[in-house]
Length: 51
Image (tube, rainbow, N blue to C red; front, side, top):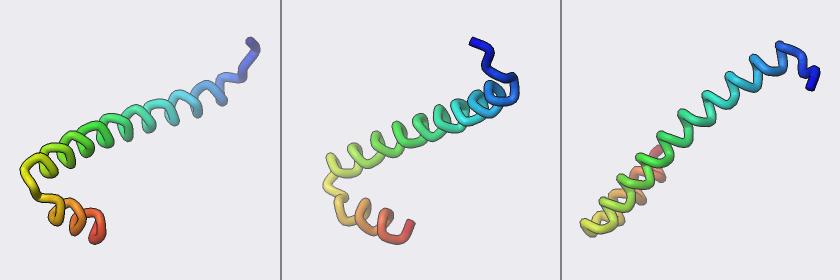
């Protein structure tokens, strides 16, 4: 497709960063779901406010 190598390297770096962010978001959602199931909704609210 004649894409310059510099675009490919920049795109690869961006893709890796997005994958890491996706994994972090996944575990964050699991934590939030577990805390809500335990009934700690206020704790989640405080964490989000102060984060």
